[in-house]
Image (cartoon, rainbow, N blue to C red; front, side, top):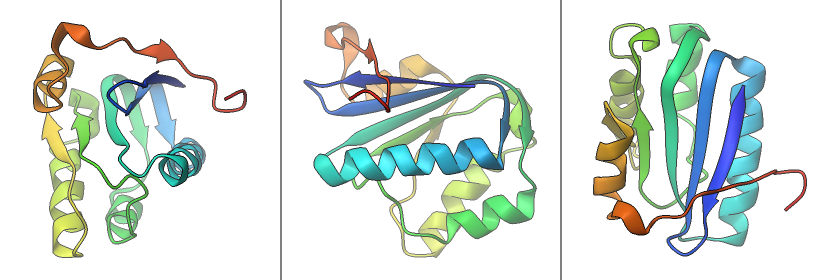
Length: 133
């Protein structure tokens, strides 16, 4: 499941992924990020996998996706989890860099993501329904 939040003042999309994450969900996430980034070129993003249970996307498919252009032009941060199988988030980031894309930063906590985005306590993320905004 993916829950979406926006912090409009600081232009940050947060996608909180819980439970299992599969190819259909990653495609949905891509479409939503692309649509928001088209409206807001300075958009930044947090992809929070803290409560991920199972990553159901083969490593080869993740490597292939890393070679695609990124939708969000601003800083992207992946909050990793144990379920991401041995550094898959860092591998994805590295492959994006090799492909000439701006690689996402990988952190181990949401607090670290807030620090990197200079959000602190001033951030006010509100639930965002991508079909309703």
